[in-house]
Amino acid sequence: MWVYEKRLQFPVNIKEPNAKMAQFIMSQYGGPDGEMGASMRYLSQRYSMPYSEQKAVLTDIGTEELAHLEIVAAIVHQLTRNLTAEELEEQGFGPYYIDHATGIWPQAAGGVPFNACEFQSKGDPVTDLFEDLAAEQKARSTYDNILRVVTDPDVCEPIRFLRKREIVHFQRFGEALRGLQEKLDSRNFYAFNPSFDPLPAAAGNSR
Amino acid sequence: MRELYQCSMMPGMPAEPVSDSRLSAQDVMPVCGTCQNAGRMAAGDKELLMRQIMEAGFAMDDVALFLDTHPENQDALRYYKTVRDMRDQSMAAYERRFGPLRYTDVTSMSWNWVTEKWPWEGGC
Image (tube, rainbow over all chains, first blue to last red; front, side, top):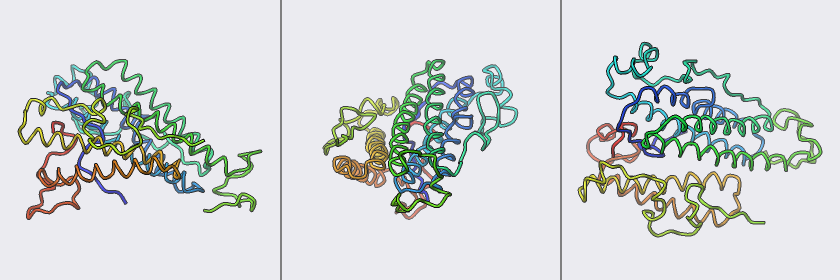
């Protein structure tokens, strides 16, 4: 169950359209390390987590990523608003314009469509949480790349906010992984998949 | 060792009740230029209330994640309750004057969920 709040998590008020920047930033909507993959990854991985703490972290970060997806869409929407076909083409937006006009569609900056293979849900909590840590770093690097080419402060501010959230999420996933490993066999975390194999009685689990 | 919660985006913000959210996060949430220029008119109030909702709402999102991995932390729990109350109050004040932010909060005789601007449109 989800409830929509008619507001952004962080405000986006862009005064100057710039389709070239929109082309770059849309990668964080539907690109390989974008917010669509992030939200789908975490919300899908929840079901095979053996303990409540990890289920909570994945649910709440996955939900926040949906709010980030909306922020990125708002940026792309406002950067392409009120431009003519000629202006869009001049600013390098021609190929996207032909297929989508200025509608929002999930693709990478280079035009590769969003694909569920950009994330995993392995059914193994240790594997999944390591992927989540890497995902947060990859998204942070992408925001760093964006910030090197964006100069408009109206665009930089929400991008910086999103970048900082990747760092906080990395921290929380690290704590979730540590919490999980504390409950597993400390001599060998990989001795079994706690979500799939029968749990050793000694683990004292409360599913 | 007990870990102290500090709001990640507002490092100066203590995990203690804060009386005025407007003072807490001015560096985090920028003020919309259009409304800043609108002076003391209703649009300015709308902007101020939305900013309070965003600040308190963000603080709530951030501390909730901390509590997910530190569920026994009493300071963080107290902070969560404080910012949640601030958000609830700002949201109720906003919705009374400027329309619903959730469709469950529609109270007028008309379905005003559809008449207000949508968040991605920018402005206030």
